[in-house]
Length: 201
Image 1 (spheres, rainbow, N blue to C red):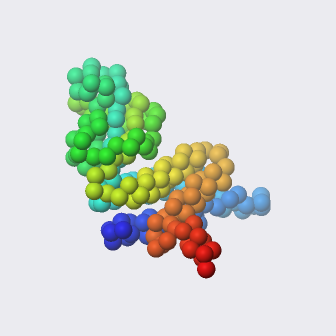
Image 2: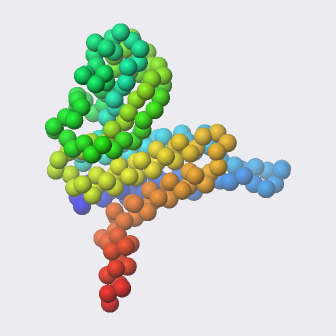
Image 3: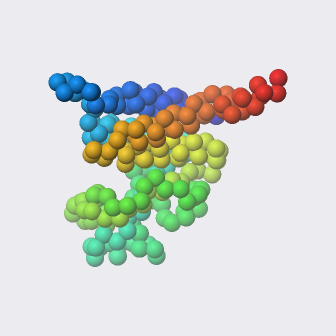
């Protein structure tokens, strides 16, 4: 693994562990409640995810967005053959199944989201259906890509679990799975490989 990716995993692991440690359960005392609101956790995780998506681009893993028809006339004019308008923060100018990248069909998110559709000339965000696709450069090891996409997906799932009045156990579950993925990526051997090697002694 190249040093850039290793540093990325170490930093991301540190940020996720800090987020897990900041998730406090409700106190049993009626006089003092140090519960961490889910909204606070959600904002913290959204920032971690935003930074992790940005930094993954430094070694060739990207998240690009397909915008379904938002209802504007300008959307139909700007859309491709599949009625999508594309956006990405990297200036890649991708199109569907762009041959410059590997597309395995993995998605970070699919659903309604309030944001700017690139077809808007006035820059006005609105609620519309979007799909966040993972893509990566052909010279990236597939195993590295799968670790990155898996960890980012776990963070996204933790964000979705951080809705109002939802139990905090769901947030921790996905973040701990992300930590396990990162541990295996950071160590010279995965835990399973280490167990297998030690079993043969």
